Length: 121
Image 1 (cartoon, rainbow, N blue to C red):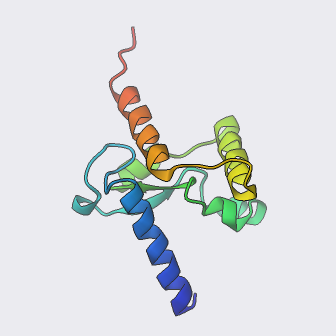
Image 2: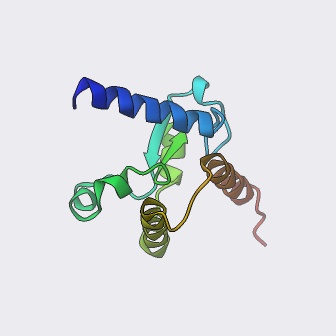
Image 3: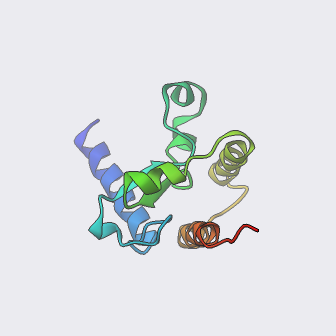
């Protein structure tokens, strides 16, 4: 990776953390207090790198700000959910759909909040 590419990647990372309001998209904790990272919802695996376009795999909709490895592990999607996210990313990249990243991250945080506090009867 060239220096210019590293700077661009770091800038994008900072923009994503800012869009998430420096809060983890899973637990809502402050990113500055943990080990902030971008978690891939559709895994960045050898198989996926060979079969999914790099722009899709590393899209801001697939890389989500989290505070820890524990929260990272809770984001992973498989099957139809992963396929739906990849299709949405492709629509965004092609210009068919637009996304407000701040709202997207806020929605994810709300989804995980509801999951944590749902009472099963």
